[in-house]
Amino acid sequence: MRKFIEQSDTIEIQCWNDEKDIIKETTLLFKDSYEIVNERNTVSIKGSKTEEISNRLLYKNVKTNGRLKWFSISLVKNKALLFHSEHWGTEFFAPNISEEDIAYIKSVTPKETNFHQYK
Image (cartoon, rainbow, N blue to C red; front, side, top):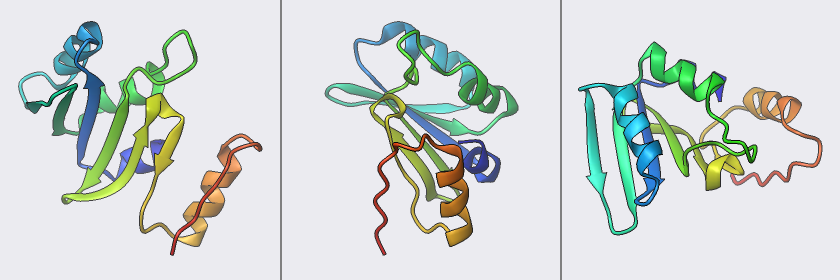
């Protein structure tokens, strides 16, 4: 995720409505510079990337079950999606990446990872 965070300018985090502690923690990370959207079953929190949010996503992001704290994370640059992770980090999507990026991603993910590449 580090590679995509470095390139992004906006972060959007989505949580389930009943994850009250995670929602509160996330809004505190964004401080006063965020937009929140309540949907039927989810809450989306979107704001500018900061060093504090980046560090939290990279180093303090895992629950005791080994999954990311957040249901989904989107990293965006100039309103274009760079990276999207869902299902607490068990799936991710990265559109429009180079063959070099693909090789890098494969080199840092577990060997048993399933890759699907669409062109």
